Image 1 (cartoon, rainbow, N blue to C red):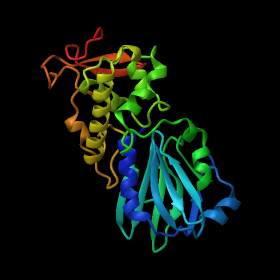
Image 2: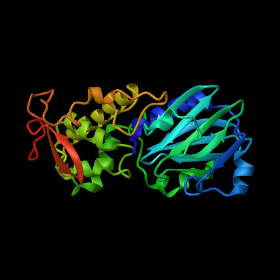
Image 3: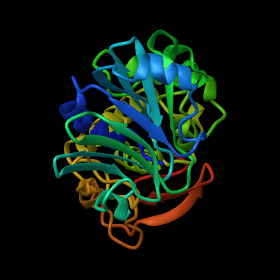
Image 4: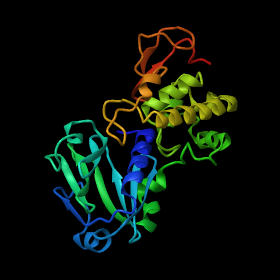
Length: 291
């Protein structure tokens, strides 16, 4: 599943490409992938113009001139591929559908944007979906009501970050930071990188972490996620950026998937452990569990 920087990269790419485009037609082969009433599609999607492309946590939203929104979750193997007169811009699971003639056997939804341009939603495993929802109702989706604040928002402070964890005092910090109801969009890669940067062992209880450590963790979360967006996302095997190129953040990773290599801070060998039920990468010298 993508993490926030990967989805943000997709959002930025599509925002450059499809705003002001009119959706002439939409065809789907799978009701699970496109669970929308034909009447709603006819009335609120067809001939609507794209007015914006947004992101909330790991979910994409394409706003329409009809005051409806296409809410899109790529899940594990989803792709969005825009094709315009032979030019191609792909984002998502890096299988051959990014370069194949489309639609192909993985195409679940095809949006005709006129003038021989199309946006394809491909999904091999059929876990992803595209839902057409009144824009005003998007904040009332269960996921949207549960998800925590965006860690990269300019007005999200270190104090607010710390406050989000106060009710998780008996939870490990790795589990808490992965909890989307605490903060939005931080997944395994960026949790490991941020905890290493803050010198916090992932199995420490939230209640043992000081305000000073939380302030440093807040800074590290924002730093590694902004760096990943700058580099086009991670090269974790399931995601490429909006131009169909692999992101380069993993070239700069300090700890994630570097087990057996020296810690770039102290030289101790990076190890892989289990924390919060996930494979977790740490420096055993920099991140002391008893600290």
